[in-house]
Structure formats: C-alpha cells, structure tokens
Image 1 (cartoon, rainbow, N blue to C red):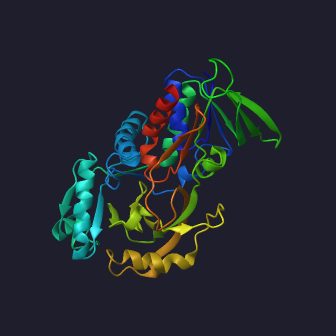
Image 2 (cartoon, helix red, strand yellow):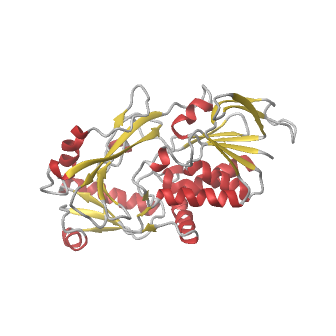
Image 3 (cartoon, rainbow, N blue to C red):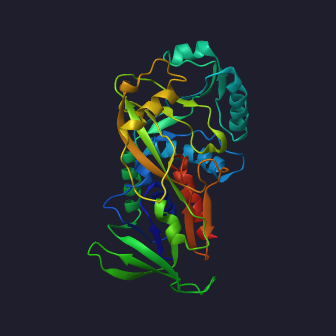
Length: 366
C-alpha cells in the first residue's frame, strides 16, 4: 500500500516513521525547503507532562504516552533535551484551589512526581520567583526541536521514506468508493512542484498533517482551524533554571505568559494569544507588546522592568476554538476512509508527536 504524508512537521514525520516501520512505502510532501518550517519550529520547545487536559481526552492520553516515546527517542538518537522541571505558581492564595485541581487532574492522567510546594521550596529552586504556593512537575522538560526534526527525518529515510520538499499539495480527490478493491488507487493528489507546474500523484492512503493548512485540505465538512499567534520576548540578563507558568486561564486558550528556558541558557517569556483575522502568516514581534508581557510576568517575577525584554520570535498555532471559547481536543478526521486529517495539533502536539504518529498509523491499519 503506497501512502502519502502531507507535511513534514513533527506530526507528519512521526506518522511517516510509524507507517514505514509497519512496512509501507511512504512519500512525504512539504511546501517548505526543509522539514519543520511551520508550527513545529516556532514554539516553547517544552516536553509537557500531561497534567492540564481532561482524563481520557486525546490530548491527555497522547501527551502522556508521547512524552515517554519522545524521551526514549531523544536518548536513542542523541537529541539534546533536559528534564528541567516546571513550577505552576499561584500568585495569590485564591489561586491555590486551582493548583490543587491541577494536581488531581495530573495524577488522574498518570503524571508522576507532582507535588504542591510552598515559598521555602520556591526560594530554594528559583529565588527570583515569588508565589504563595506552586505545583512542581519534575517530569517536564525541554528539547532541541530542530535536532529532533533532523533525527526524525533521518530515521524515516533509513526506512526508505521518500521526501519531496518544495512540493505544495493543492487538493486531494477520492478516486475509489469507500472500501474499494485492494490494490486500487483510491486518491489522487494535485501537487505543485518547484517549477510551479501542477501534476497528479496517486496514493492508496493519505495523511494530512499540513499544520496551519490542514483544514483547507480536509474538505468542507471538517472543522475550521483558527490561527492564533503567540509572540515571545527574551530576558536580556535574567536567567532562570526552571519553567515557570501561571495558573492557566479559563478554557485553556493558552497556558498564560510563562517563563521558558532554553538548552542554551536563555530565558524567554511567552507566548501570548493573538487571534489572526484574517488568517495570515505574520511572524513579526511587536515591540510594543513588551509592557504587557512584563506586567503579566511581574505577578511572579517582582521588579521586572519593561526594558529587560527584547523581541525574540513568534509562532502560530492551529486551534479549533477561538480565545474565550470552550476547550477543544485534538481531532483526527477520517473522511473518506484512508484519508486522515490531523486538526488542531497545537500544544502539546510537540510532546505527543510520536504517539500521534502511532495513532494515525493505527487508524490506517484498521
């Protein structure tokens, strides 16, 4: 069975890897000139533990399983990573019940090592942080996402996966009725090559992991994705050792402006939440947003001045709900059979990527 994966981000590469391991010939198409130029390479690079999401949801299940798979993969293939740990801080006593709920949710999801801690623990771990209480997650970490993309692509190539970069998929047309005869081409992709000429590519099955553009290929019946931009600012001089997050806002529109630490030692704040209407790929960081970032971070980093921040990067995540609307799970639409579209793969999509790949492979093997 010949399969085509659209998109060479972490979800597409992981799906190609799982399908190749099952013995299928796989071709990966991507509009960029290398892997992971979209959503995958513009994020916090955090390995999440899986404590935020409702038990039994795909985000909870695939995050917890994906974290285990990701750590194993990083160790086996020398991908730089570190379990630096995360503090979710309650800046006032009235936020402590929310920390307790997160503790209970995390334990229900199978997250190990979670612990409610007080100011003394914070002073020992992160002296610059002020909070009345915090939830400590020692299993949260960071990863070099660019090295991860390279390793995933290398493993795919070692199993015979073919890559075609600078190839944009314009549409997917079903050729055979659902459940058609074995061996019969079931789909035809219209592909625009580097010379800007379009051609037809047949396939027995298709994985749509096109990130921001996945809903455009999925068809009119699939849910629409909302593009939400998140900017980051770098702290010029301050350095922290751990990830520091506030209590998440209602509906998990984001996880709040938080502190991320890099393997290079740099400390960043972000991302915020900016709905892009109309949808557009805008990665510019507005320096004027620095004051709002600093104000948000001063709740747990007292004395932080606006001048301590400088623009870093921005990313866009595909969300299935607008900010303020109820939370939405990862969504995998299989319509028609043999055509799987991966929608809403925002956080914790990086952590969950290998579990996402195995999940997609199971859908197609079924």
